[in-house]
Amino acid sequence: MGRLIVGIESTAHTLSFGVVDSDGTLFPSHSSLFRPEEGGIHPREAADHHSDSASNLLDMLSSSTDFNWDSVEAIAFSQGPGLGPCLRIGASVARSLSTSLGVPLIGVNHCVAHIEIGRNQTGCIDPVLLYVSGGNTQVIARSDGRYRVLGETLDIGIGNMLDKFARLHGIPFPGGPEIERLADEYLQKAEPDMDPVQLPYGVQGMDIAFSGILTSAIQKVSDGAPLEQVCWSLQEHTFATCIEVAERAMAHTGKTELLLGGGVACNGRLREMSSIMCSERDAVSYWPEKAYCIDNGTMIAELGRRMYQQGITTSLGDSGINPLLRTDNTDVTWP
Ligand code: ATP
Ligand code: FE2
Image 1 (tube, rainbow, N blue to C red):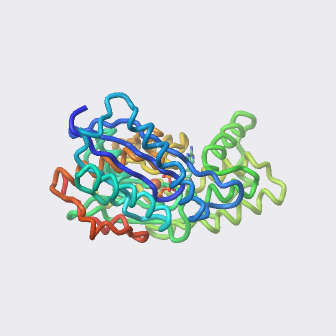
Image 2: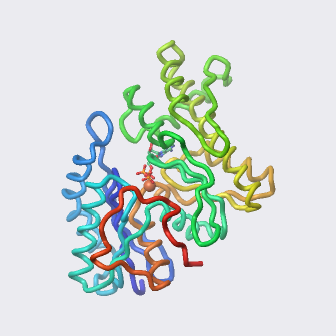
């Protein structure tokens, strides 16, 4: 390890510390995921989880092989978007580390970090990004010094939609992986039959709506359709909407790479659909390892590194959190 950047992620359910060195070599994150006992994520409870876990995770970071606080040259943290109480915990840990080590602070845009970790890991250069996470569903491309949002959800994020469907059927957070498992189970057991589990299709221009699909999927289960079959249909419908918008973005921009990012990019079926769509148009699809799809500190460190190498740092006075920050609010000056 040469000079190091530490990244702190705390936007929602996960508190995570990760590290990258000045050449862009990534080191695995130390993370703790808040799992509510029941219901959705309460911001105050998630923030309490973050403050309770911080010192443990920092101890794990301190004792990891080759890590040395003397080599740390900057502290990056998620400045937004996210849940205010959660963001505040990450920001205050970042401020105190930066002050005690006497190194600069770098406030980063969480959404942009999902993009840059994917570019680092896969080597793709100028992709259309399909950013599919709990809170966000966006199709993004870089143009004129910003990551522009070409299409996005009109209501809820695809991951939150999956988590809500799961929760209503007794599956704890995060629901996405279990929905994927149930859908696979359905395919192994039966000849797939979409007829009885048709759902609405939510594409409107370049935007997507998920709440109508969610309501209809819940109805199918209460009408007696097997849960696994509805999980399969829910994936097929919602992933197809995302892939359709991503394909249109590639056609409009002329870009030939598709990069998946965000927690839902862990899903094997979504990855498969991306590969099929891209191969049909002589393009290439990419995704980072699962550990770098879900929220993680290493992605915050990686974006911090790119900003730091452009001379961008954040003064204490400017280090306030911004829960409503958007992907396209951040100037992108790095290559
Ligand atoms: P953001 O702040 O970027 O919106 P986030 O806080 O929701 O992100 P992520 O870790 O990026 O967090 O994504 C979490 C989401 O990913 C959850 O909704 C979870 O159900 C979903 N997810 C994780 N694995 C899978 C999977 N295999 N299939 C589908 N969804 C998945
Ligand atoms: Fe995220």
